[in-house]
Length: 507
Image (cartoon, rainbow, N blue to C red; front, side, top):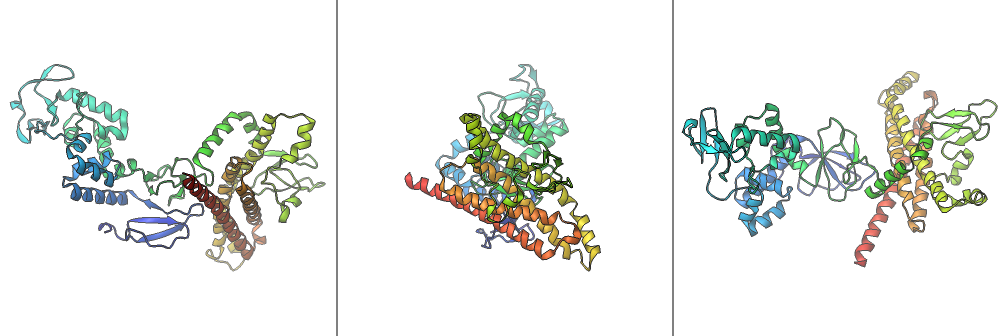
């Protein structure tokens, strides 16, 4: 049964080309297409997380026949895995409760409820009636002390200092703080925290850490907060999910928390970052934003995302590729091959200079890194252009009888260009770690070629003067680019599934 205190639905669902009904009967209010994943994931706000957490607590209460605070603590202990909690609890309730920090003996709790009253074993009495006892930390006698149900007594000053350090040093984990006695594992209660002389900030921090929705996300392997600054949304996704996109437009990898790096794996990205760091000298050279024209040597600065460069020297006008410096005529039609590493290309030079294998490995690395970096830099430039698109739309409105809505195809095309360029940068990381004899490589590189060519065509379309932009051409171009992207990611996904299936069969 879906939660009753939500108006339209439990959560916003994002998926790719999936019109199936949700399994738990919840309605989806929004379906945002995600170009780079096929799995479904949910975008939740804090209120929705709280509703789902409360539902889990209620169900645990019914199954275990316990109070809500106990059920919530048990769920935290078991990282919100209700099935595993239920199994272990039914097998041995006492052991499960002790593991979660609950005392199953007589209640000896002593907590000061006010300046002049104290609750002893649930009975409120004047604080002056409390007998003197020795603190187990400072070993000084005191009549203002507290204890949990375990009966271990500590003066309020020592208890406050102990818990204050826990809150300051352990952050969210402070809710797992236990009795100061090193042999006791009873959890410190919220009632005790409220009674101690902590700063208001420390009490707020403890209460915030204790909040169900925060624990529901922080301690739940199926949920993660969006990593964008100032975003309070959470993502819920099944095990193994990588690329996700929040409603704030921020995309990240659900598995490792880094920026979304589809189609390469988390391990490949980690190795890539290490390799890039090790090759820091080449990194500085590769990050240069100027290159010499391969024909006349005029220095050229790249100020747009498109890789089709025309020399500004009036006597030259040579058209070449910014990435490989080759003639642009070789980058169109069936001749486009800039994305593929060709060891034969450097063969003569290698033999002439007697390059060793390490040098050839570096050349291979440079091939993929220059293309990775180029798309990364182009992405920044195109993001700047994307932010200025409203100005271009206004110019288009003024040129003809176009409304603002008529011109929105430019924003759609920009979004498609960003999606394609973003994915392309990581296709070179994926290709770098793809085995040389992998049959899948040829198919992948063919699709990568098509996507790259279509992306460059789209970039050229959007860099035209407003008066030269034709709506039909731009729409056809960006729709084809999106199709190329889907095709590329589909073959990567299919290849991964086939390898996983083959591995399972061999086991």
